Image 1 (cartoon, rainbow, N blue to C red):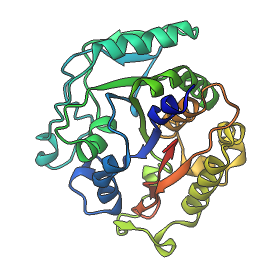
Image 2: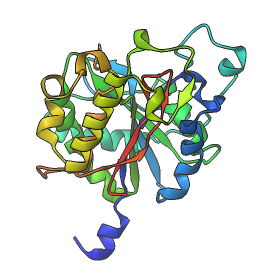
Image 3: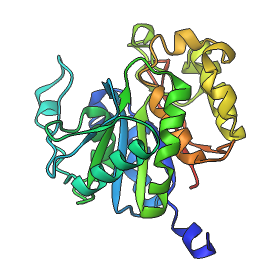
Length: 274
């Protein structure tokens, strides 16, 4: 690959999207997302992998005008009034399915599904009314980190086609452990010890590009079972990791934002190739 081609390669990003109210919340993560687009090359389209869509086989949104899914309840009406009217990209959806099928997966296009809040709640801040097409790829039911790394590796060619691969989940995500009196914070004094320890381990392993350790985080990371009682919010990170690595054994990334809400909900975000 030439120097010019390498210069065109898009980064891969993992965002911790936090509460559905992120678009309205006065927290550091919101400010970070508002500024993020200025740090990224403008993509031709965005492929987003969210914690909030799992399917039996990898599935891709195929609508040319995906709806805004409000997949939550009990929030203020203003949140349900939000719409993220990004266009879809059926051609990109077909390209993703082809890459996955060439890699040995059964995959499908879902033309009826819209974009869930794991997609639109960060994008409505980072790329508001941008006109950039957005396609969503599901996670896989009952498949673990290594399987999602392998899935992500198949997506790596998209980086050289102007596609931003953006994974959206949570670096630490245990809703039962939230401190509702600790709305936001960036200092260690307001962060639960176990959450801070897990987030730092994750950050260190990403900086080392250590795919093997990250894939085995359940056994190797401190407080892993508390940080992620279920794996849905960390699995998008492994798709990002695979897409960043491609065929390589390592994928060295960097933390591009760190803050916490409610004492333990990490809003840390990471990038590879930025």
